[in-house]
Length: 144
Image (cartoon, rainbow, N blue to C red; front, side):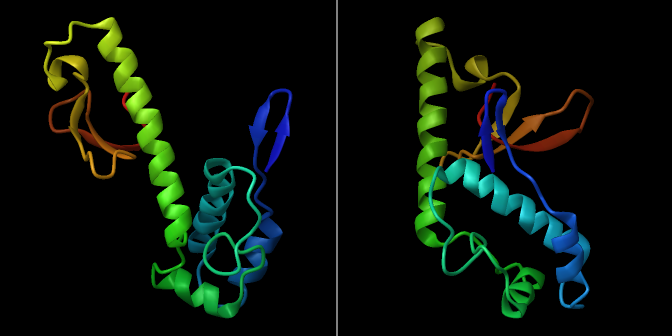
């Protein structure tokens, strides 16, 4: 991940993904998805060093690749808590801003008409109503 005048960007080195996939433990798509999550982790966690275990390790082992195939190569509990707290702060800030700009007596449905349901325990996962009948999409982020 790098910070430039134009913003923050992350790079996934596909030759490394291909190298890991050639070990025959996890697929290209599984490894690529976890590499993307790793880079997004840098963005969400801020300037923290790599971890000794889990998805934020700098080098992945064969055991890590096996964890990827089982859906067990994750952020550690501390990292997960930091990400959830940051999401809650962002969501609270947005809700406060909306409340200042709207009548306080209005319902959540009136304040967030496009949002079908917010899982308030995990607000980073939001189910939105789609544009056509029956269409549902899942979004990570905060309601906009």
